[in-house]
Length: 262
Length: 219
Image 1: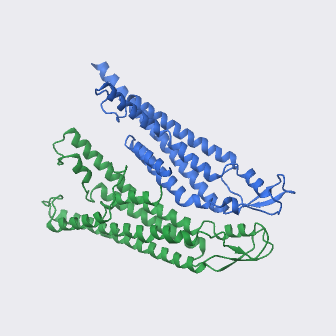
Image 2: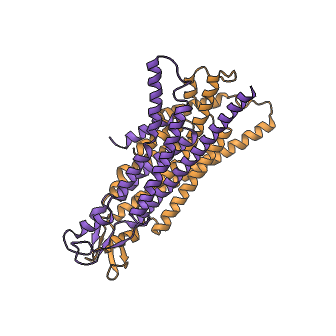
Image 3: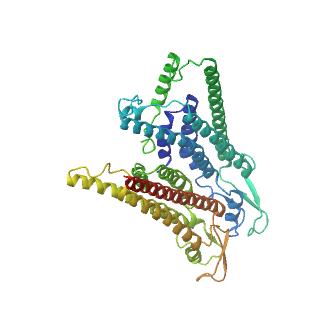
């Protein structure tokens, strides 16, 4: 059980996302989770061992470390990634619920059900409309909120995004003001700025996706109001091509979802 | 053998769960198991090495650490995760029992082995009560063992062979406290989900039972 399990769960949501949503997911996996696991964890691996204070007073180092790092950067990023990925589960659950309803209709032998077999229901990609639109939009909204909250918490706790080389500590039992030196401050600053930059890119992608969905929604409404004969399920040639392109993009980075979409 | 086994077990139970049960499984996976593996475990990784006492007396640090942490908080967390997930096995076993019965008698005894009625419903309700019970037991155990969920920076220790009362410093107390509060919050949410699922199922099946007897009486 590790980040791979999260990737499996989120990979299933990929199929029902917009193109911007798929880009967001790719950025999340490659530039955040993967960087965290293969690089950032090593940089912060020896953080307390190599945090050195200019004193022999036992306990001073522990207390100063705890004072300056109430929660380690790496743990905060891990929590941020978990919280930011979770709203996508709302979408996965909604899709699973819809599939379950369609399967129930199919089993009852409902004439309205247009599927030939269960496999077709399982493989179907749902369009983002109706109640799924609301679920999807709220999941993007919550993602934005969590990203913003964590970035603010980061900025607030560490007084900015720079890691200083030297910190002065006078917490008890340190005898007087003591100099404490952080290990690898430049490397940590570089990674911090990188992670903040990628968070900002993710925030922008989420805002763009939200605007795209809202604009699409209002355009559709005005089209419906203007042309009442327009059938909502009729796909134009362009929409079919777009869907095929989306399928190709999603097939290249799709995993099967175990459990949540059955 | 690792956490993947627990994940597979819970994924198997997912099929026979209600909607609230699936939310419970999602919370256990993501906010408890995943947080434990990727974040919490590393916070407690070097807890003994970084536990420092203000003395050069050999053996004092070991004795004091053992006195204040009879079972490490992270191990208690892992035990809680395992024991709280285990009642779900009751449901899996019952479905397997139903399927083996059908095979043995070579006829269809149930509408569907996975359908929640009769014995399977009882097994499910018992598993919910056990899950909620175990959660509460572990939270009380945590509270009693560590005098609350706060992790102090400094503890005073006067066990032998420490010469007098000696100051001992715990490493990363604030970070540990944050994760312990997180653990308590997620446990609380899981208890609430279990209790609401229990009430929902009891209510639903009592109404069903009542309607059946009512319609029989009418006939």
